[in-house]
Length: 432
Image (cartoon, rainbow, N blue to C red; front, side, top):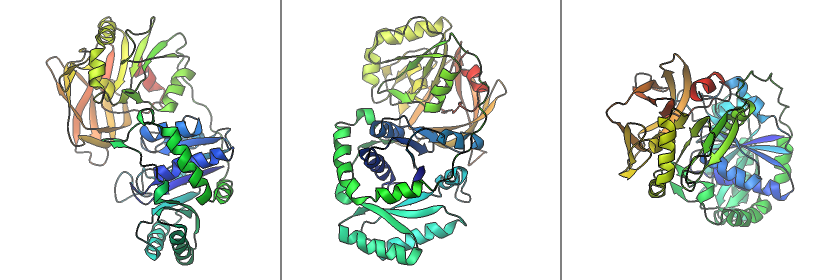
């Protein structure tokens, strides 16, 4: 069984709706497998806290389209997929490429559309009708109503939607039910930093289970056709490779499938904290430093001089390393004046606006070409001796190109986030 929770736009409440639906289904005793459309790292962290299961991303740009349905094969009772942005929003305004709608089509999943009902009644039906009619087969099978003021308000909207669109309303959340999760520059503050998270979710879920028609939602999820099995891909044999993976509040942006693929290659993943541990684990073959919020924790990262020196010595000694976004910033000389590892010839500073946002194609100097995405407020300034491995091309504006992929010794670091679970040849490039 599976269901996709879409939204009319960013900010309509689909993350709150998805989290509380997952929590309500858990309260009913179901094992819930969560998913997130798009390249987002933060929302899956909330999914994991609520369901107890790690969340997979589903993204038709960074992933091979034929690989996406196989990620939905699991042994849970029900899969809940949270959409991204507005239902039809994706690579550009002319097509539905890389949208939540495209994921619904690729996986043949029934969709519930989340609408914000603040100050509306019959007009909500007009919004729903527009979404239903925009695509020939929208796959929208029902509506979830957010931010209603009362049960009576929901009744008005329900009658209007069902009369004018023929779609059923599957429940609602009141304005009082919302979680009011804190945000920062890249979206929600990650789950591991949100105080009293489970207490707040459980309190909201106790209300949500009374207003969401979980019986009907489970029934709709049961109509999704079974996912066909796909042949497993051949992976490189990396048995005996001990990979140190940075994991704490500053570095936690990793795709679940990427980490699973590395383990399936035979690698041993050894987790460490750049903020708390005094040195790298012993006997490592390589390092993987993902993205996150090193700028938020720059004082603590800088204060841990023994770890910074341990990493610098290891890299200067030829240890292989692959770093993304926040990992790149950490390996440079400084972040806003706070000393970092000092291995890569660059310094980073934060700005008050997005510097890069969206899908890109990376052309590597080794001849490889692969999809990726960037999403950061930071700027990195190359210093003397900087050497670049990448030409990065913006997907929606191919004339927009820039150099990235700092390479030094056996280390490669870039702002671009890469999905390599379906591209095992990239493992050979990133982890020497």
